[in-house]
Length: 384
Image 1 (cartoon, rainbow, N blue to C red):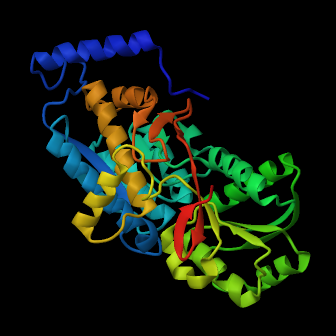
Image 2: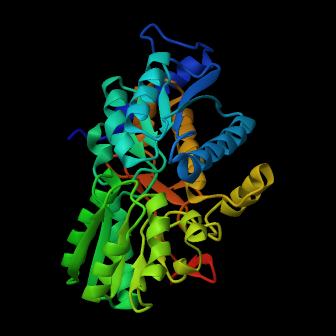
Image 3: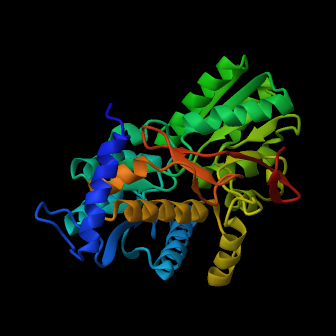
């Protein structure tokens, strides 16, 4: 696998050459490398229609727009958006990425769903265009190529960390899992869970399955209750997480079984209602975190949109800031030079985690401290 990190000397030399060109006020050189001389076009792929629009797409779009407004006001770079609706389908995501590649954008942000990123990322990679997903987290997808980056913590990073924190406090020794057997993220999440649980000496009593779009989970929950696990892990997308959590109460799942949904947000908590009380999530962002700039982000988001920010808005906001910093460092709209600058990102201050320090590993997956949250009195609060 090709690694995204480059030899520092070569990278610094490239930036130095570009900087000289910038001071000479050129907008391109005779090799076709484009310096920053005006607006930088960015492609945005989000769900504006279909099943993922409400839970993911609209929040992502709000986060991107707020970040662009702030970044442009600072004056270091001027970003323009071309937004394309992926229609909540893998085919729509592929069409959107191809459309943006054909338009000549340097980078594409968005691509929320792991299934969609898996389908569309090869198009960006083959055309040497950055695909920077702000939400997808199935392990291994950044390995599609060196132009692929992600803001969410990948499952192989977040789940072992979350298990360590929750098992230490809850002491579960036998568990059940339920997952969407056709969704890329859910399948991968369950696979990582299985490996991590077994490595920690936790017995898996049953692994129940369903398919995207299912609405009745009574049989799976009945099967889970019958084996009497200490905890139940849910690997699913937003709509199914909310429905499963809501139905735990209807099915009679006892309070002794702790419910853990790694991707839990307030969207699912509100939809599930009282049944969500006590549910635990492994989260990359919290509105109560003191990460640098986070409380200002919360205030600005509320002032602009009149609602509390969602985690997917926060991650999209962060994505654009990380990308804009790479463009500034590269002093170019050349995707290859921006890619190299992204790969060098280390301890960049963001609003994510509790410390805000954001880096990439060699495959382009994000590294920062994770937050474990639990639902108390209808709100997500720190688990520790």
